[in-house]
Amino acid sequence: MLSSYRTNLLALYKGDNTHIPSRSTLENSSLLTGSIKYAGYQVAYIAWGFILQLIVLFLSALVISIIIALIRLGIYQWILTLLSSIWPAVLMTIMVMLAQTILTKYAFLQENGEVLAIDNR
Image (tube, rainbow, N blue to C red; front, side, top):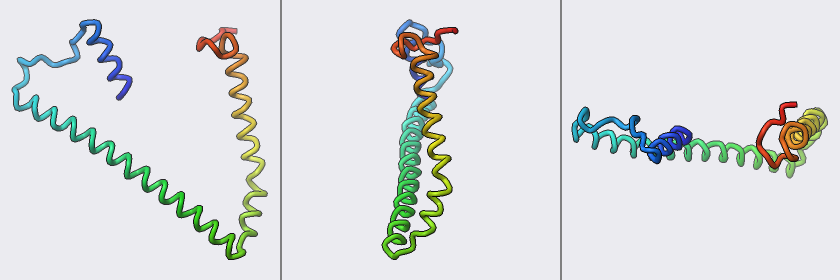
């Protein structure tokens, strides 16, 4: 949405307004109805995004609080077993991410990552 907005705005700055429908084809009531719907859709999408974030954060906090409660009750052996089985995957993920960052900065980009252009080696 933002990229098409930017493209349309740049076209308007250049004087190209072909993406805007002409007023002769639309009635005043349909223009006003479209404007009201656009604002309503924007508010609805923002509200929906807020609700989804609220649900995800609530579930994350709930899981963390359950884990802390189990540790306080003395039931923590399963956590140690889980951590001992997944630490190689976590370590490998961190190493791959660091390798990608270093390679993109020093091998693939020009001037040690200062210029965002591929070196074509």
